[in-house]
Image (cartoon, rainbow, N blue to C red; front, top):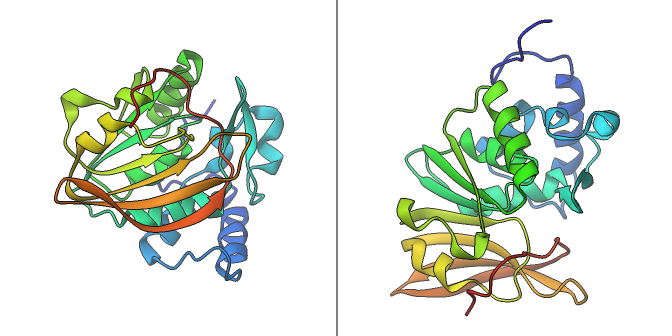
Length: 225
């Protein structure tokens, strides 16, 4: 058996990735424009982050189940959320809700370090293995409650939340550095949710925009504002 490809090594599905990215670049609703994000979306092998029986659908622009009631997000939404973080190569980023590890892989190609928290142990273990196999060696994964963030690695330049709390958890706001950005879906699963784009100014989170979305709920503790 050949070893798993490192980032940037051809894997036979580059054409599918290109077609996927081209499809949402043509769609004005996707709002994806950042050339750095576009390049990374063309590079990261999404099929490696979905269950084997769903790999044929990996380059459809839609969410897919990954087990334990969780999903891998729609690629165009992953790209847009990543773009709106406005990250820099020197940044340290916190992700809440590792899931499959796909979003962490995307971020890892754009920033210095990614710290990712996943509450479901089996998902954390699988994501860590796939990321290691593919050579994404600047991602650290912790199994734990995302409401608490990752205090001993804070502050973070940016925070991306890939599951929906009913309000922004206070520890996450505290762990975001001044001037940093956060992207987080907020709202109960039974009601419309909003994807909030936030910036920390004078110690407070200031809203920069919203987008209607549907994410799986954030589970765990009650450390919320």
